[in-house]
Image 1 (cartoon, rainbow, N blue to C red):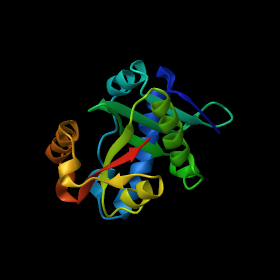
Image 2: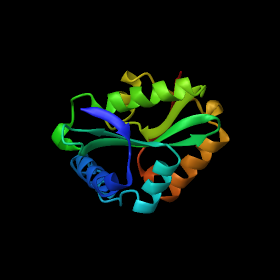
Image 3: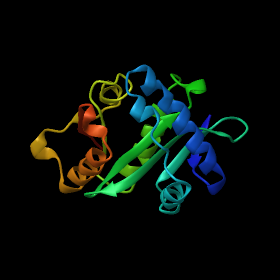
Image 4: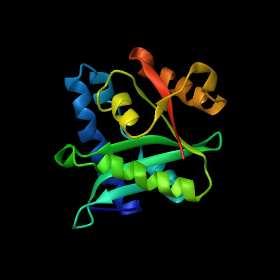
Length: 168
């Protein structure tokens, strides 16, 4: 498996990965999250054009995992990281995070941030193991507050969520 920048011919596959990875939320009692639409092709194209979309590919160059990010308040904010269930639990998500952390550090950006579900084992507990720490309310920046407001408007506040940061 190797990591590379996402290309337009990856976009449909990235949607498939997100849908497949999201199915685990149904088993966790969160069917609304499982049924949420993946990022649109236009949204994925925007991430790709801005240099904020990466994929892990198998030996045939087929995407099996991906990460997209946005600049938020001077940091790189991980918007989505998804791994196809067929290759889950092999460290691909962590490898993507580490890859992006290295690029982010090299660019002089001080931190990675993300928002996530508190009680989902493959969310906040996983990100803690990847070096992220929960942010106290006073540490949440205006841009992260805007991200959280969009998530709340989308109905994600039905379950406890938090902002996390990994200093680089």
